[in-house]
Image (cartoon, rainbow, N blue to C red):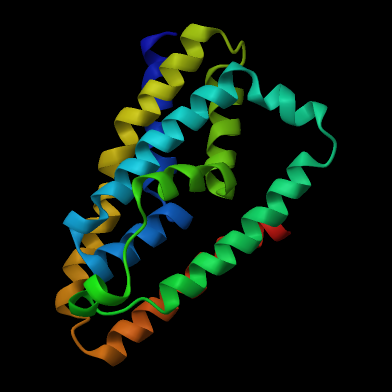
Length: 196
């Protein structure tokens, strides 16, 4: 892989990692509701989970999906249903001072497993390998996975920081509820491309 292609891959990883999607919207909501520190396992679960998913998809998991009829449709239905449930959880999240009693952010494992049904994660993985590792050699798969792993954590951390900074504005229960409902609606909106 040339330096030009590596630079393009890094830019692609950055843009696709930092733009809005289910992971980033949930991280912003988690940062606002639970703070940065309590959201770290969620962030690490996304970063490491997505990197592992990329690697497994790149070394041949796509062939397994191609061999099983209707697997993509099943994945789509499960993704839509799970994201609707997550939107409800975001909408009903509690204030930070109550969160230790009534709610908790995603765990590392929950966030890592979510990558497998996250429509944006699948789109990113398929696009990355189609554009930057069409030969699917072990070296190119490792490189694509490594670049995403390096770029992803700082990109998604920005969303958690934005959410945490919003805590000062969201001290009023009405504003917090409006924020949570807005995040839930935006999370549902990320499903529009999947459904259509």
